[in-house]
Image (cartoon, rainbow, N blue to C red; front, side, top):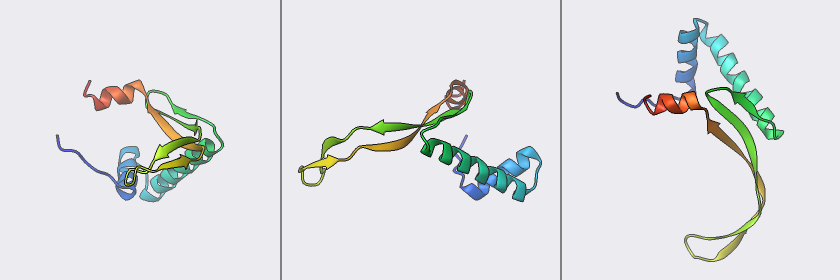
Length: 97
């Protein structure tokens, strides 16, 4: 089975086809889902789609790193980053189980 790469337009088309809805309704649904997940995680909340994925934010402490080109030490500031954890059903599907 060949790998298939999908951009947003192709995702919208696939959702519209799978759900039997218009492309416009699918685009609105995809946009709304991305917006709600982004806004929730930005407020350090969590969005869990059981068996599929958990979106959340993680805090990363400030640390000292190295510039890979020069080897010079540099300060890396503390930050909050988005993270997702795949659910068991999703992992199993990808693994072909």
